[in-house]
Image (cartoon, rainbow, N blue to C red; front, side, top):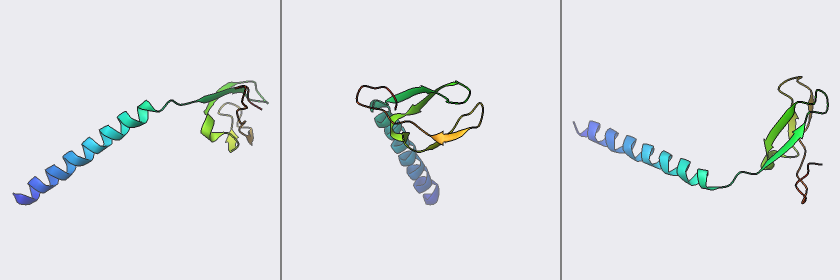
Length: 76
């Protein structure tokens, strides 16, 4: 009986913490870089934080380095 109460309390806390984290994360504005695949010209969008990392086009599977945003907002 006591273990069920403890388990319920822990589960409730974890669910509440997860919901709070999702709400907090949703408040942070996400900046995106829009560009085209150099091979197939597919329109793509990545989070600005992922710029400069290795990437792959979902359409043609070509591998390249993801572009970084410049101050003007145009990918390099």
